[in-house]
Image (cartoon, rainbow, N blue to C red; front, side):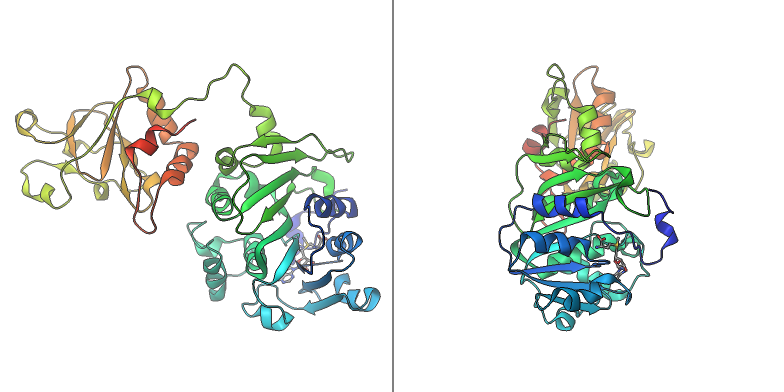
Length: 402
Ligand SMILES: C[S@@+](CC[C@H](N)C(=O)[O-])C[C@H]1O[C@@H](n2cnc3c(N)ncnc32)[C@H](O)[C@@H]1O
């Protein structure tokens, strides 16, 4: 039933249907948790479903709305329930709840899908759980990611988070790094796509996501779909690499590779791969231009023409050169996956911070297109090592599959 848009409620109060709550809790596969938290508990539908399954657990609920039904749970349901009326994004929430960070067994959460006014301590919350880099501008972090971060702070390693999160986080290109971070640091155990009419007061699309904190990512992520009539589809499995791209059942079931379609290894598109030889320092001592990663600025997809060597220099240069059609991929540095470009004319010398990929004949456009696509960038991020200044190897690059 559609009664309004999400934006119409400044606290994002859209409550979960009891059946969805029951499905979420059952999908978590948790036997007997001691402590269950629900940040943004609203009318308490999630903890209510939890209490039916986990009779010995103690439940801690938080909601900023002093009229939220969950505030009455300690009275109506007794001592197993504790409630705090206040801000779930409070940096010192552990003191307010009398619950140490890293001690909860289960987190249940349907966070508000709103964009809160940025407060400085949000940066600390994000930093602490390794999510500070997931969006280019920290001020753009939506409340749902902040709620996930607070849940991760409260959960112990191996603890499980069952959440209902909006479609954007699951399928949006903007949130690819967010998904990557969850997959690399935790295990996304299951995703269930919910039908549009699932919330009582909005048509927004959302998904149930079950995650285990600090666990090794399962190799085959089961994704399912709940129909508007309440039937749960069979699971199809996707690899974590595909999960970085999107985690929604609708997408993967529509693009599922047929038995005849091929997975292409990057090495199949490439005739040769070589590494530049001149360092950024030596390039200053040679008389000809040498293209270095700092010359490749944001949004640049082709090597600027001033780096094309004159005929005279072409005869005398030492080291690796690149020619028209070659693709250059930064090998070391920050934001590696943003540093990809191609040579459209002439011959150029590159520094040792680049790998030069020479495409097979006829694959010139294809090679550049796959590497420069969101999928290609995620694949490069995934093979990069190190923190701060990261690096990739030619070997790992050749093994990337699309
Ligand atoms: C989408 S509703 C979900 C309610 C409930 N968990 C459910 O699934 O039905 C989000 C809830 O978060 C609460 N909320 C919004 N901002 C909050 C904040 N900063 N701290 C605590 N609760 C907040 C709202 O009052 C609302 O009850």
